[in-house]
Image (cartoon, rainbow, N blue to C red):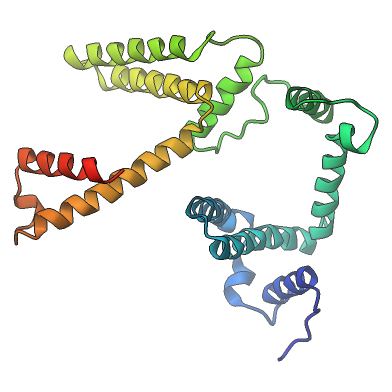
Length: 263
């Protein structure tokens, strides 16, 4: 091998990244910066989630490695500017975990999860005194459903919330009726957009009350649609016709048949 690499896995990975970024390394890696690779971080995170859903440990190990690479890459970029390195990142999160778990590493009492979370949030406020806006700390780049749920979760901590999930369900019906009203009277695109946004917002709130993750539920619903559509398409095309040649009623009936079998 051209380079002598450390045997310890983390040190080996860090050295590989350093070499890739060096003048003797990879042209593509040399050209990257935080912004050019930031979407990779999102993509790799979602691939980790997929591996978890598939309950595939081998795939999960691989995808966690890909995600770790992104952290190593961003750390290397900062190391080259002498700002911080991977060890600083690890030191920082270790320090934070100790600070935010005083019931484990100090003498604070926290007998239940509710107390743990309360203490966690109080410590977090002291760590981030620069945050003035109530919703500061919730990234604007979150996927829309995730951000909506996080915003409403934070607002609910003040007591601004529905009493139970059935009250939220009634609000869903109300928002749906308002959207239907705008559709019937052929409201402007702006009004339809506003009413649809309100409906999304309250559905995210319903997910929170049901202790579900709106983003995850939407993703699972989309995946179920894909599975059913693929099976429907396969069944219909066995008749020797293209899918586009079937009428809406034929496809709807085929869809209903598939939906009974594919959950």
